[in-house]
Length: 100
Image 1 (cartoon, helix red, strand yellow):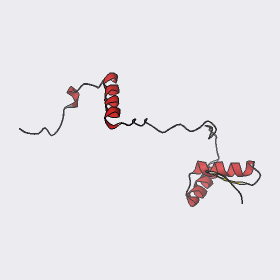
Image 2 (image 1 turned 90 degrees about the horizontal axis):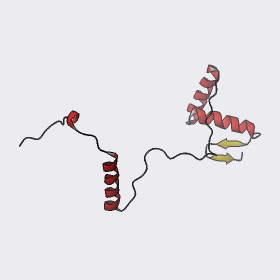
Image 3 (image 1 turned 90 degrees about the vertical axis):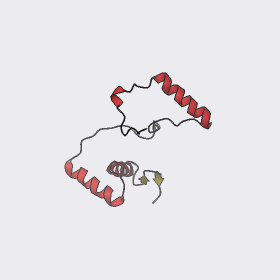
Image 4 (image 1 turned 45 degrees about the vertical axis):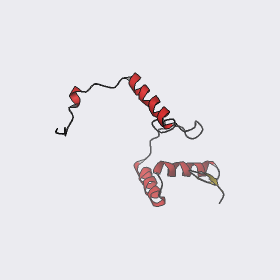
């Protein structure tokens, strides 16, 4: 008997939500472990606030350049600069405060 090289998915039916739940429970029972939730876990409310600002193109280009030299993201760099200024010169990094 020949093996089918391709499957015609146009004739396949969708799996129902009940079937998906049954599959998930069967996997958990078989392997005795919970399946991980999908997606990135949410950050804490005190971590960051979603803010949208407009920056001059030259300022943004400078931030990109400086961040690239330091090997960090430009938003992280801007955040560190603002925190440094807001805290009176104490140095902050993405992992928290550091004494100079």
